[in-house]
Image 1: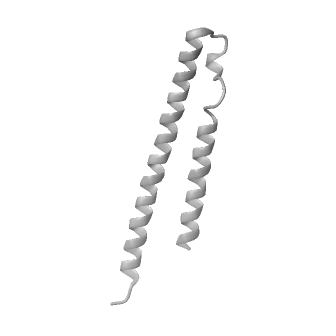
Image 2: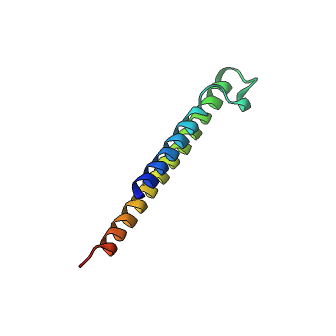
Length: 82
């Protein structure tokens, strides 16, 4: 049961990371009508924001995996016979 729950959580985080990274492609709506350096600056700021967002999702993913791992170890130790 734990394995399927773990794999489902991994799939959800993978979808979240892919969806978050995909939102950073193209020119943002806020940058429409800008030209030259202003357009470059707006695109760069959007890319930085996407990178930070994806990085935070990956950090949360790692934290959830650590918590799941520790809880599985505690469960296995508590349920074993002496």
